[in-house]
Image (cartoon, rainbow, N blue to C red; front, side, top):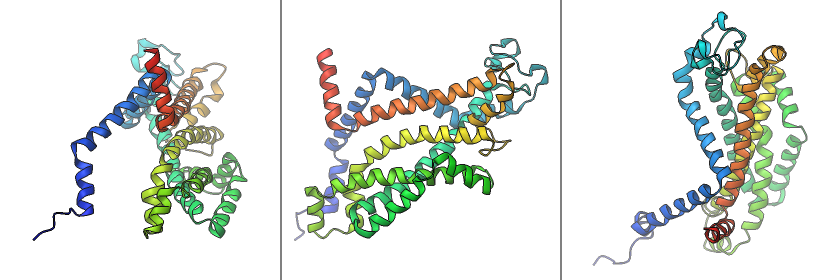
Length: 319
């Protein structure tokens, strides 16, 4: 006679696919959206970042030709030169290329470099932080000393040294920025794990014979993920500024590739006669970094159940 007791794995899948489970996930998502909607600053930041994301995805595909088209008759055209077409609403550079088109196209390289560097550093630093916090002992000591060695050099100085020795290409810029930020994630995750590993559910998993990798990835990693996401938003803003500084110094991304930092650098020789060449890319850098910082503050609240409950209680009283 077949047993009526369900297999554990089948039961887990059944619960995950049940209407109640799906309804709970949808409710949690709506709850987070509600928190976002009541924070107008965070909402505007999210909208701005969504617009930038659209520019990153479709901008080079639609406007690559306009960004490269040279028109010496429109050389250093001032902003709102609509007589030359709406693409020149922000003006033109020293070769008569549309600044609007170049800013949109440059968003892809700028965000790709920052996003890739942060993703690599988050994964590497997060994994090393999990191991350092859970294992402790000499493993933690060695990893912390390596982190201290990297952090002894400011990110900009370390990038300048490495890129001066090697070719300042896209790959090298991403790698050097990623390595310079790994210690931040490592130390943050390690501090979280030191507290989480003493909780009852981790002790229970260890007593039941769970493997170390299962404890780290299944039980502890989800607990530190909100902190990682918040930190990643802040780090992306910082990495964008460092990449812009490297491009400004001439050791970052090289032409014909274009980034916002490189556009600022190209316009510095024309600040007296064509200030808009550096102004508009600088505004783009400022707005995106500000939006990332503001959104990271909202993420801290949205991923913390206690903070989210307090905010919803306050909103409910005001309503």
